[in-house]
Image (cartoon, rainbow, N blue to C red):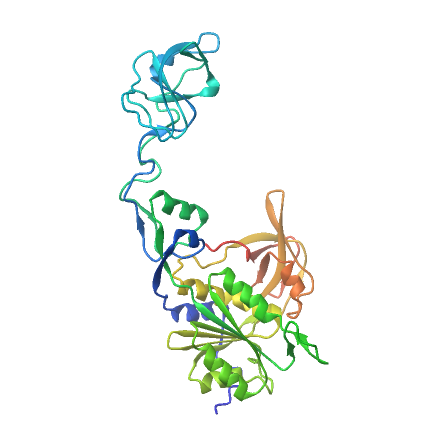
Length: 415
């Protein structure tokens, strides 16, 4: 068996992401009810086959009238118009017409009757004895919503690769779409490795720690649209590991944690080789998360993430998350990176990008950021308190309070 315990195939963060995304082939599509479509990714463009709204309608409760009939109107000298009808939302305007000196009572969303060119809102009127007094001058097409004002027939209103927000689901409903074509969700097998791990509910033996990674990654996979499958803890034996990894390759994506560094029992990369998984990189010039292995077998994507909880989670954010989104055809996969004022001094070694757990706030219309405490890769608490990652470039060794620094907004939607 090939000895994989070497510091080979080392790449930068940018190179790692490029290699991963070049390896992704988006999944096939499926049709689902729009009630189940929130956060799914569109497989086809959506082209409008109807106008929204379908007719000219009113934007207010009030009176449909001819704007010129209210010229010069004020509270002291109101315009007085005869009320010749009423139109409710959803009702027909058949036989109803506004002519000079008349008005028709109208509700929000009701179709505009023939002859009217404005709607004056009810707050600016007073009704009395079959007439309405109008206390200000209306402007032409005031509170008047035109057919197709929101959406016109033939408009490409949603694009392939869009993630379906609540508003986009509403647009589908406005176009009478009961179902929608979306990319299939990737299945993701999650494996934890190491004799030192005890699962939830198991008795802890001396020297053991709780298996945290499986649960943080399970939550992250679900958050980004994948279908997670936890395959349990693999002990530090080749036979056990091979069996579980072989099963995991039935999924679209495999994520393992631990066993990818240079220790005696770090054999995950050996398993990759044994199962014919083509290793594309083994190490990334980043902290936390340097021992991060990525490989591919056919269309299957295989990630060997570090075992420390923060290293595992930050590696997921940087590398697995965009791969899952690209598998689902998403066109927006980048977390926003903005500048913030650093409120503390930071020192680091050269040679790696540092991703420090940080929390940004807004003061005097500017973003300010501080670290969230202990930055050891085993301290998940500081990650739970973070809303960003402070990005310190590879060759930078010192930053002073007051300088501007790049921060990645990890809780923000992708751009």
